[in-house]
Amino acid sequence: MKDSFLTINGPSTGEYKEKGSKFFSYAFPVKNTDEVDQCLEQVKKEHFKSRHHCYAYRLTLDGSVFRINDDGEPSGTAGKPIFGQLINRNITNVFVVVVRYFGGVKLGTSGLIRSYKEASIDALEKCEIIEELVKTKVELTFGYDMMGQVMNALKACEIELSSKSFEDIANVVFYVRNTQLDEYILKLKSKILDKSIEEVKGIKEVPGLKMTYDT
Image 1 (cartoon, rainbow, N blue to C red):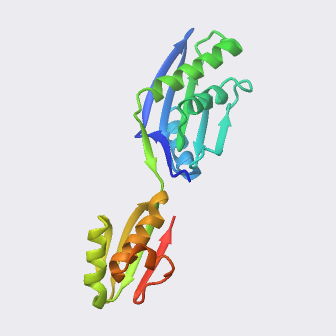
Image 2 (cartoon, rainbow, N blue to C red):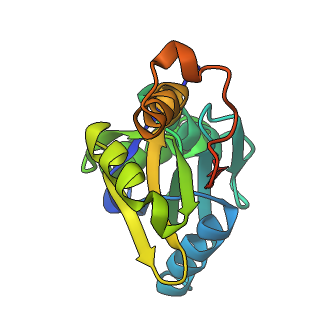
Image 3 (cartoon, rainbow, N blue to C red):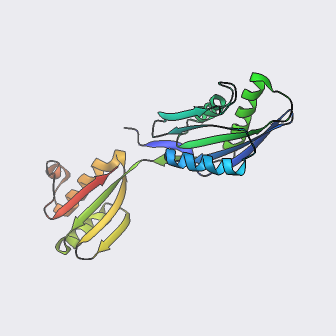
């Protein structure tokens, strides 16, 4: 099961010039279409005089959610070469928008394709490509009578807590890489119940402990 993907570590900008026309490019790490819309609106406000804000994005673990937009340029001359750079780098959760200012000389189909491609490359080359892991949020809720068992088990499993709360009832939250989730839960149950891994495989619930998951 795949649980990691390549993306960029932060926003960046680029630029390309062709026969007087100027192309300003922007690359953003994004998680959803709402963030895409926010980034696009930001660029449009900065370049409100431009008629073309062409873009492409890929979302989700496998990059299956995507969109290409030529924004008034001839079909296939802007969004597609931008998108091609995301494919070439095998990156997802990335949004790239390129703004064009006409320089007085028509570039033609090949000139536009080259310009949008080079502008995208300039922005993306200034980013660091990183591997991001897909993790599951695990939340444990338990009474104070189980405090020692649970906290010692978490420590033994070398699990780093994201948050913890000890009020009327104890609550702790941690994140586990998807491909390691089953392994960690078995280890945790084993330590809490002081049983072997084989013995806890058939145990769905630990008495007194509520365990919930959120991917």
